[in-house]
Length: 308
Image (cartoon, rainbow, N blue to C red; front, side, top):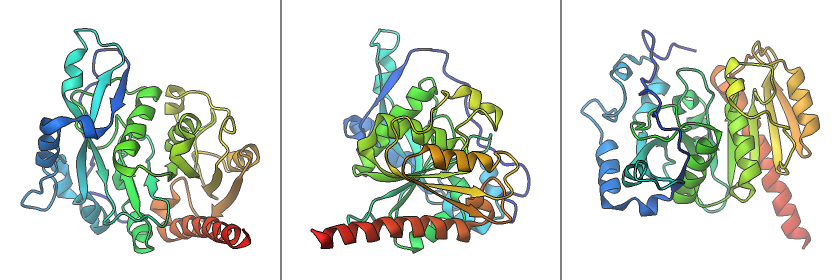
């Protein structure tokens, strides 16, 4: 794959907020006129076609797929409300987080929307899907790419602590505000841990799960220590696709077999001559596996309807 930029490109994030208070996120319907105006300004397109909130390094991108997806990134408001409404915390409730995402060109009602999360390395964002996103969209799927709280291009000046609970609540209220239907939640690498945690707490928001090189056990990247130690099958009853690169040098494919066995309704597919990120290294094969999995589900639903 061609390099993303001519030199190192990483979103610059502000330092974590000093407060340790926990927050929940309110639906965007409550953000008010100021929040909507801020979102409109943040999503305006600059003269070069890139949203103005992207870092200057975006101008060095040479990868055509990344350029096209970067130009579609926008920020949408998600209101923060502290769980503990102390006077010191109240100011946070007045300013929504402008949360970065790529929206589908059109929303559909005849199939479940597909929501793409990302991994947790220092450059992670929705741009991780630059090769696979257009393939899914061309196949007719309603596809969203969402930056997890604490990563990507959201305005994080007033963010809550980016712990597991905050990430979960942010994603839930994003879903509640903008998607509003059960979704196919796709989690690569450590994003799979976020997807599992979300599905356990909000099963009604998820129709199916897709894991890619899932880092949900102790083995793998050091960032795993920041997440809860999951028993992967605990509370997860959704149909699942476990997708793995046969040559994954970060997470052993032995963990793929383990995950398939521990999830009650999972199928396993592997991508040959591929490492840890099939959706970047082998996007056409990754997209085909996703589409085949979703087609199986659609066929089964049709057969069930005909049998009634």
